[in-house]
Length: 296
Image (cartoon, rainbow, N blue to C red; front, side):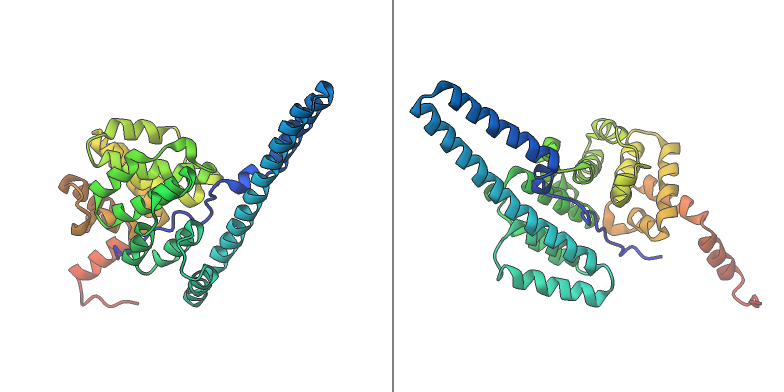
């Protein structure tokens, strides 16, 4: 078992613009524009007509900006999906991301780069995200960055830094259910490990982990719930969630038994007991007890 498995929590997360450009949203905006011009036509006054023209141009300008942002987002998401094919594909995708913006601090490219870097070098991913000035990006994008950076902090045992980011996240800024779930996972674990465990458990209890839309965020959510149930004294639920994590990947329990994770000794003990029940662990223990046993 290894404890070096790092998360890929935002593989399908969106930053919001694509959601705003859905068919229903465009129909709503079109209806608003039509209503504005109907008001102008009824009034017949040139001042009202001028105001409506300015408002229409502003709306169309905003839509064009959103379209460009959404197109960039879709291109980046397509690149990320292709990067999962192999280490070579991931390296090629990183080179493309670096070339696309010439080293600028575009937040979408930075988030995508950090996701790919996290697979092999979490420290580099952290530096990439820390280079984003959150005061200069939209609120939704800033909270996406906080959620991803906070997850990486947690995986590196930097709990207090994650808590600072978690307290600044506003769930209303989430672009879709996946990004909201990631924010909740990061907030929940940060709070659970820094004394705000009851609020963390309440936050996490609203999510259904068997929801297909949350499949890619299932592991961070389970991680957070393990810390929350343990901190709230719910030991059997803690064991159950650890077992669910073990079914996902036995390596995930390394996060609870590794010394560098700053996990409470009792929780480490529970994780080791759950881990000991795994068939591979039992087989290894039998081999260690009888190293001369002939394997047929």
